[in-house]
Structures are given as C-alpha cells and as structure tokens.
Length: 177
Image (cartoon, rainbow, N blue to C red; front, side):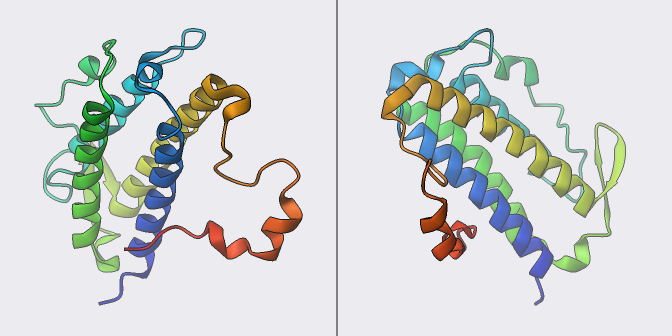
C-alpha cells in the first residue's frame, strides 16, 4: 500500500504536535489560562484545536467536516484546566486525526469531502487543516515562550546553534509511527 503523500501529511502533523507539546511541557498549570495582550490563552487554543480536529476528521470522507454537535463558540470560553484535563482534550482531537490519517491512502487524495458545505479535494482539506494547525501551534509556542522568558528551552535551533544544527539537519524530520 503506497501511502507516500498521506505519510508526509501525517509526519507534518506529528511535527507540529511535537512542537506544541514541547511548549506545553514547559508551562505550569496556571499558565495554561494566561492571556497575553488580548490573545487567546493556551487552554483556549488547545480546546479549539481539539474541537476542530474532532469535527473535521470524524467520518472525514463521508460527512461534512463541520459537525452539528460541535460547539465551536464554547471552545473559546475562558477555562482553567488542570494539566490532565488539558492533555485529555488535546489527545482526544489528535486521536481522531491520527485514526483518520491511518485509514487514508494516496488514492483517496482526489476524492471530494465537504467542510461547511464547501466541496474540497481530500488533499486540499488536509492542506487547509495543516495550515490552520500550524498557525495555532505557532501561537501556543509564542505564548509559552513569552511566559517562560529566560527559562525558555528552545524547540528548534537556539540562537548561536545554526552551525551545530547544519551538521545534523535530519533531526528536524517529523517523528514517524
């Protein structure tokens, strides 16, 4: 079974998941609900990402990606979750995504799915979802870095680390199953 392109999508999703989890792991529980300058808190972003992934990827090939049971506005409600609650929400969304990706094959990519009634090719829907994920993971990392200040542990090439990184650039490959 040739899953080359689907495997690339899966690898990129895993890379962004790893980045976000690296940021989440550096925070104290009370920091999850901190909002900086009117931004969404990390808890809000996690609830939104999870809700989006669950809605988009439940019955991905057969049902509209915006499910009637999704409460999108509730995802943006202020909350102060424990680490366990935050990770439970996070993992629930990722579980749906990974299960769906595990069942896709490259031959599914030209098929049509719908999101909010808009027909999209599967590969187009995956690209849109990945871009959406990347933007929110970037927000999570930025908020976490701002909260940690000098205590931040870099998730990518640290300042002054380019030469070392260039000796082993393969370590930036997305994790595989």
